Length: 512
Ligand SMILES: Cc1ncc(COP(=O)(O)O)c(C=O)c1O
Image (tube, rainbow, N blue to C red; front, top):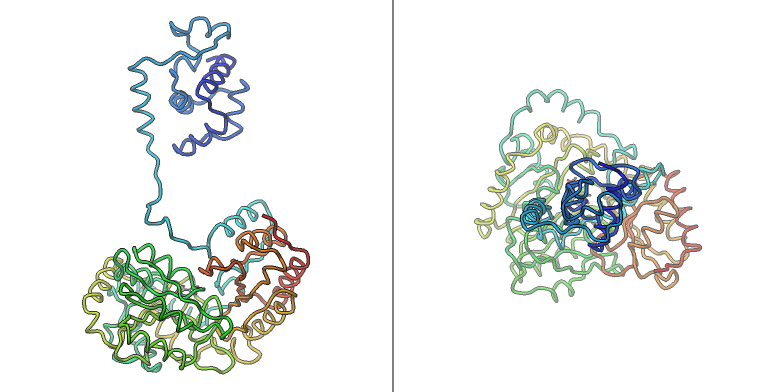
């Protein structure tokens, strides 16, 4: 095959089809064919020849005969093959065309399911993708985007590691689908201490993190169009799983003016005859709020009045500061059906082990059929990670090392105090002081910085200051005026980060 003739015929066929180099690159990507920018420009300039599979792809895409493109003379192309004066690529004959069409249609591409069309999970979304690209090209990024304690030096209690080692060889098989007896017993006793009513061993399910159980609960409950009340801002997995299950996530407002507590009037306004349940996240991610008993009582009253299931995500229940006490909403609702979620990812700093649980409580009779669905989905994943289940009893009993982090002088507490002051000292930034977990959700004076797109703000901060955080929209917060900071890094690192953020806000004006 002559490079010169091939290049000329390639250009000719591209011109005839009105295709540019970039179009071929896109078609190739769609068909899963590896064809880079540099390859195609080398073919066009006659520097290299393609491999047979690429040649076939080009011929099919440009609808010309492969042999002709390769430079072999065809009867209807005698002139062009030798001297390069061709003005027209030979049309393929009917048979050839049929083969080409068949081969082209055989190149099936695969699109994601339309079920994912409205699913959003920005905690690992486009801003995070941009950060990964920057890291790949050698830029160091300070990540304040994900609540993952281990990379920030929070170590698993030694006893937990020791006990897991001891039991590892006994954890080779699947466990009971809902979990090991010892783990569930320990969870049940923990739930009793929190005054969660009417629970037995069979009401406890372990999961590969709370994440898996949220997914199971939404899939088992929601039919297309069923509504579920979810806070705004939320931990976005709740909205994502409800949407994926076919349900409609209806967001109720948490009010920044009232310590980020749920707005009960807004909840009431948003209930319809399709509303099946209400989700609360307490303590809250991303706001760090802790709901007092009176607020919980009002939510229970609404749920009772409208016969709603209560889902309560309490994964941060052991990370409560200022000597406040966490109250499980299920303890106030013995007559309603409640599911309470927690786990060891945050309190025991073992997010990577993947262990969480859910506790079914209260009036289980009304949810008999739903519980069958939960059992079915739980059986279908066989069981959760067994080595991680084996240390639940150790983790939940005895000394709770997490206390050392949240008491006065403890790391998380000191970092909370530091971040709150450093951020609220920045002109144009305000915040409610978090009481629990390790997140703060500050407000931006959008007029001052001309911000209309909070994702763009997060991207600009990332590119200018190499700091990764998640914009409020990532938590289903509608206004472009918030962002979340994870304050797990040590104070020295938080100081560097907040100085950079402060400098950024000293000059930033959003331009779209
Ligand atoms: C409110 C909330 N729920 C659930 C999860 C998921 O936890 P797990 O690691 O147990 O899947 C997180 C993780 O950040 C969270 O913030």
